[in-house]
Length: 379
Ligand SMILES: [Zn+2]
View: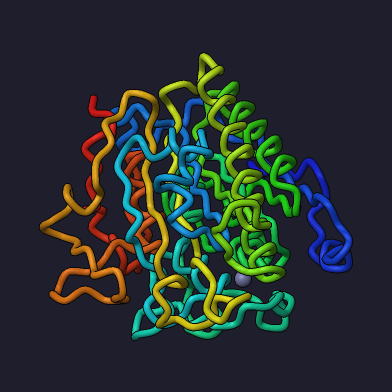
C-alpha cells in the first residue's frame, strides 16, 4: 500500500513523555498535504460548514456567559448569540477533567455497559503499559477523530494539559482503528497534536492549522482544550467576585476566544464556514479549590453552546429540543423525567452533524444526532 500519510516531522511519544513537565509547546504534525484535495464527505453538499472547532474550557462556570459577567467578555458574548444553555451537565457520576473529556470525544458516559470506563485523572501510562482507551473495555472505542479523519478531514488536538496524550496514544498510528471508509486515510486519526499551557499560543497554532487546511480545500475537525480557569481555580478558588484570579482567567480566555473569532471573521475563506461548539468538563468550587464532588451544582453545571457565525438568533438550546432533552432543576444532576439533560458528551456528535458526518460508531449520547440548533445554516 502506498502510504498516503507521510510524516513530515518526527512522532516519538517517548521523546514527548520526557518533555512532559517542561514544555511549552509540542507540535506533532503529520499528513497536512498528503490527502487529495478533492475529498468529499458523504453529505458535504448539505452543509455550508467546512470546519468545526470543539472547545472545552477547563473549569468554566456558566456565570461567565451570563450577565453581568458576560458584558466583560466580548467573545463569549458573541459565541452565545446562537443556540446555547447555561444549564448543561457534566458526566453524572464524575466531575473531573480527563473522564469528562473522554465523554466529549467518544460520546459515551463513564459508567454503564457502554461506558468508556476511564476514571483516572492523571497522566496516563504509556501506550504499551495500558495507556489507551481500548484496553479496559477490550474493544475499540471510536472517537470523533475516527469519523472525521476517515471521512478525509484534517484533525488537530490542541490541549493545555499533558494527560490528553491519552488521546494521541489511543488514536495515533499505533492504536488507531482501520479506516473503513474509502479512500483509506490510515490509522493515525489525529494529524496534529499540540500541548501548550499558553492559551494565546494554542489559538495561534489552531487557527493557522485551520487556515492552512482551508487553503488546500480541506475540511477540518479540531479540538481545543483551554486549561487556565482550572489552574487558577485550584490555586485560589472558583471565585466570581470582582478582581479575583478566576475572573482574570476568564478575561484571558475571552481574549483567546476573541482571537479565534477575529481570525475566522477576517478570513474570506473561513467566514461563515466555521462552527464552534463550546462546553466545559466541569465547573468548580466544592471543595473550595476543587471540583471533585460530582453532586455539587457548582461542579456539575456547565455551559454548552453552538456558534455557526454572525447571522444567528439567540435561542435556548432546551427550548428547541423539548422533545429530546429536558432541563434539570438548577440543583439536579439528572432530569425529573425520562429525557436526558444536555451534557458535554453531546458535543462530538453535534460537531459531526454540523459537518454533515455520521455519529461516532458505538456512541450512546446524541447518537441519533438529534440535538437541534435552529440557527444552523441550511442549504
Ligand atoms: Zn481541575
